[in-house]
Image (cartoon, rainbow, N blue to C red):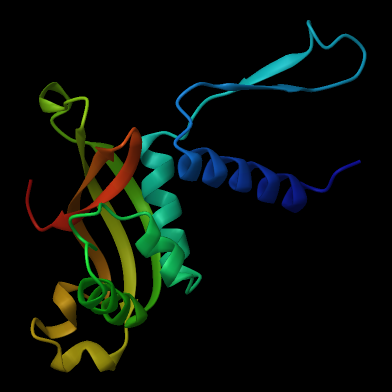
Length: 164
């Protein structure tokens, strides 16, 4: 029998692999050996909410390079920009997504989606002297709008803003 934590890790890894490979077609995974045709579950590609949660979970776990790898190319198109994002993310001691709401879905396109996020963050004092103090983060609840941008068939984190 599988323990719950191990199964959660498998599901998380499947979501990350699906995202990273740009898979757009669901994969069929057998759930037992009795009758594979009748006992399959369809695993859909990750939703926008899954991508956003994964992005912030990676930052919370200090897996910054992996989070940066999920970002749109226009945000990280050179090493200077990657290092600036890394420096900012390292000032985040903890972060948790508490709510994700699709925003203006009637304006979504095949290449861009917008979400309203409620994030609970703790920011280190190292960010106090940043060009924008604490890089615009507050300790506690933060409300941001985040975009997802499709690049080469893969949804990427497109950044955040303080308004839609």
